[in-house]
Length: 145
Image 1: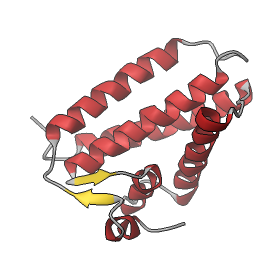
Image 2: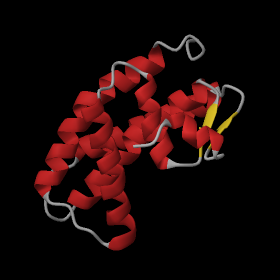
Image 3: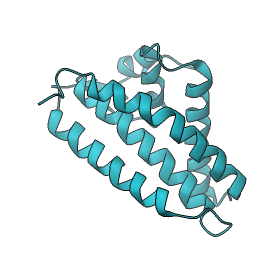
Image 4: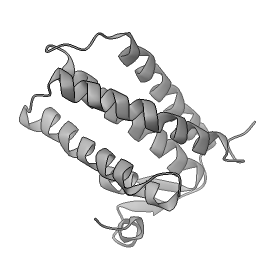
């Protein structure tokens, strides 16, 4: 797995001014997605959508932290690897998120199906990682009002 800094060097991540407005918009979008997903009953018909939506919910929160720290990522892989900078995220969580990125890509672009079990597993992951992501954003002094 590559390092976040590699993406800065090759231009897939760029330094920019810290952007509290973008971060707030991303958090709000993530919260809307979360409310929607939590209303759904997982079944064969919606499993792919739930898996893809959970990926987007978590990615948006990571992108919010990137914006607060003065980065703009043009790579989903870089966005996920950004988590390696924070000790509260272990390798297993980062690997799960990276596999979720690949799964979502396969669903969106190659017609891969996800089972209800996949959706349940992804939902369980989301429930464990969201509090950490939210705390990371809340603890950012730049984001506090």
